Image (cartoon, rainbow, N blue to C red; front, top):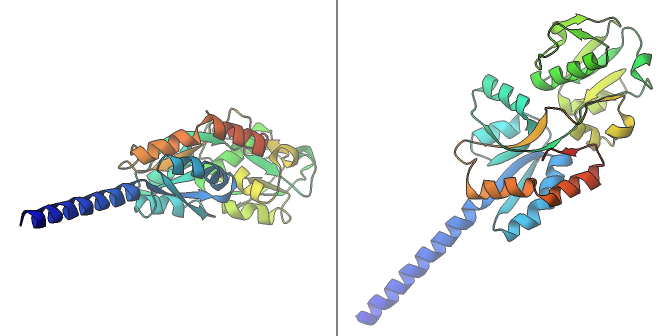
Length: 265
């Protein structure tokens, strides 16, 4: 009887240990949504190092700016890495979500591109300008145009400006608002397109060589790792945040993107 009890006890301990290790493995797996360039590339770079620390990284590539936030909020995905704080703030406000920033990683200077003119001074009267249709990136595009004296805004500090907030438009520019991912595809159809750097890179545009206007490196639009309030401070998320802001990642960003993407740490 004693032997039977001993075997049963050892079996129970083994089962508990197995369940605990399985639970730990599940807790240390992070599914992160990202746009392909540069976010997913940076995540792929740190994936092996995180594995050594016991965190399995599952990277899901998205082509839009809406689903990554919705799926994190609905707990279908643990975190995302594609957006800046002004976009997150506006998303939370409009969708009623409570997503939070974990850490800032990099800046992607926003740019103006054209296949029809060589500089902004050559932009003809009545030219069509394509800008992102989401509130923050649309406002960001208009701020860049205002900084280059193509338009004047009613409130130069309003990051949520829309074409309706333009006070002066001397060239009578016509604005076409499109989903951000679509902008590189219409660059041949318009005189000017304001494109987020991740989509510009995907379209083989070099911001430092091809952009007619580019945000400075002091841009406030730092791309951030985003999670929920309930998991933002989990051990695995802290390891991910540390990996994204490591010296190795800083060197990777500087060498791979050569100024088109700038570390923010």
